[in-house]
Image 1 (cartoon, rainbow, N blue to C red):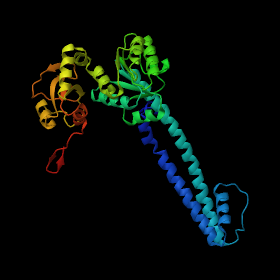
Image 2: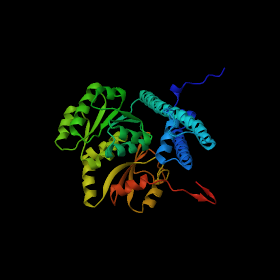
Image 3: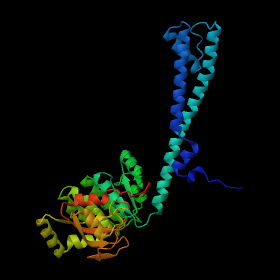
Image 4: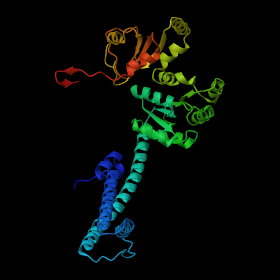
Length: 369
């Protein structure tokens, strides 16, 4: 005999497909009941009843209260209207009650299955990144990590923001990161990096302290708002502190995805002097993570620079597998998840936007690729 898996092992979306859309069913039945009430009220008014008497009689019948008839039902017309109302109205209310029960049950079932699915996926993670907070910087950081194909989980306390995280198909856990239990559920013991990017410096310090105590070997990258907070975060156990906020996401993603290149660019005296020289010329050097599906993904370095029309040129290519190629051959293709060290003439934001732009579609006859 063929065995069918239980509901507990199914994705919530599959359950919804199996059981139908309770919200759509509920709306349809409510619409049916309202139509019955309106038509029955008009029918009684057609027999000379006032609106108040007609609507009162309809509600008494539909909700089967049984307080008695408002007026005598003494004509074939009224008999027919009342019998039709009994059948359609009472049936509609039975269906409405069932739809309400189904809607509430499916909603609770979705929450249960969704929570179990998230927990199961987090339990499978190894050497992942925990992103604490899904504000502006958290959103940008999640995009960069997704482009770099790095496993990560977002830990967010606000349920509305958590819904936004799930809508973007990112793994999300609802919880307070200052609570050690939430960090445990996020897999702090198995995580490789924790990036706490909350706009609250005190919370970032506390989270850093807790994370360092729970996993002494984890790398912690913390966001700081005030300059004075940097030393406190370092003392609390942070390996890196990023401030100010407007460069936070790109800097944190750079440290996570390509730590050696980031260290070379940010900590080498030679490169610091080069960066200062470039800034004096109105240029900027940075690492950009190539998205999986972008306007420049899959092109050669030469084709990228040609399309950029002088807005940037490539100094180094960091393969997702870990290889770093300095002064790369112009014929090398850049794939999603790679990191490119670029020098931008018109500002990093414009160069980054070119990488993040959607891939262009090609037409061959009537076919679009």
